[in-house]
Amino acid sequence: MILEMKNISKSFEGLEVLKDISFGVDSGEVVSIIGPSGSGKSTLLRCSTFLETIDGGEIIYMGEKAAHTDENGNAVYVSPHELKHFRSYCGLVFQQFNLFPHYSILKNLTDAPMRVRGVSRDEAEATAMDLLKQMGIGDKANAYPYQLSGGQQQRVAIARALAMKPEILFFDEPTSALDPELTGEVLKVIRQLAEEKMTMVVVTHEMPFAKAVSNRVIFMDGGVIVEQGDPCDVFDDPKEERTKQFLRVFER
Amino acid sequence: MAFSTMLSTMSQGMVKTFLIFALTLIGSLPLGMVVALLRKSRFAPVRGFIKGFISIMRGTPLMLQLMVWYFGPYYLFGLNIGNWRFPAIIVGFVLNYAAYFAEIYRGGIESIPAGQYEAAEVLGYTKTQTFMRIILPQVIKIIMPSVTNEVITLVKDTSLAFTLAYQEVFSLAKQISASQTSFMPFLIAGVFYFVANYVVEIVMARIEKSMDYYK
Image (cartoon, one colour):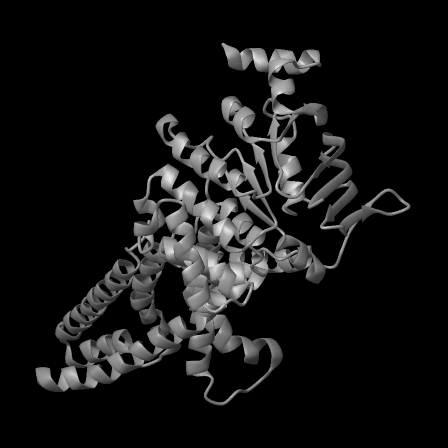
């Protein structure tokens, strides 16, 4: 197991966003999380990547506990120093790319490996160039983010996350900010990563993609996991009424 | 008095004006950043103190502040500091401009999208690295036009040092004009301020252009 989230709860100013959520991700597995907006999908991702702190539950990466609940029911995290080590396990691709606009594409990919992981410049640049080629944008190394299309920027963001060599890569609606004709190129790259057995968790509204690429689909609504399982089962033969309702909207 | 004599006498004032200008920038540009960061401190008393400081610095005339710095030590505490005139001017200018720069920095820092911090955090950058490498360079680009405005105002504000009878360009212009019953010193001062600001505009435009490579 790469990641285990156990009994996760999270509230924002009294509003319960995650209610006792548990799920795990195996090595090489691709998990899609679907559900209506406000269902807690993004919050779950942000808790998994330590951008938000949980109120209760356990976060376990590679068998090591990053957070647990003490006897008073409060979530306790490891020290900030140890947390740094846990962060290195996970990468996150944002809906809005969040590339660093003042850095060239190459520097977007090399700066964190050099400054955070202490990789040499030569090694960082070699890795970055390989990744850019893999993403089909090897010729953009010296460009700046504003010179690229949305689809290209998102592929840079994926490469930037991969340059840190994470054990697991999270995607937060990676195509939602893209023009429809640009989603294909990003989904293609994610599919390619799935074939290479990269462990991934993808929050998405692209149902055909989720069905085709994932090993497991989680349907969330109202802060709970309503249904999860094999994508064919969840999409073609959902058990829960809420899942059926949600999927019906997408068929239209 | 010959024009050339007038000019050479006033040029000594120009050096003093430049000294106020340069020292104020050297002091207030970094101090403004400290003030801006303290303004966002986690500790409410620190935030409150800084808010009050900025409020007073912006809410009272710089001319009055210069008076307070110069006469305050004697009238308030009975202190007699020798040769306090020039230091009082610099302290007054630096603190006043730091307050203005702090608010410009704060505006710049707050305009950086949260996503930039989050991307840096997920990549494992420390808080200091995030600020120095990711946030600050973008802030500098955003605030350049406002900083240029302040720097131009500063060139002209240096003339306020005349209230403490410091012999910068404006004080000299007034004195020479009165003693020689001539309008010329004011013209010289006017040309001096204008040319100085013209140089400021050119330099600042260059700096802005050097950051044009990204949007």
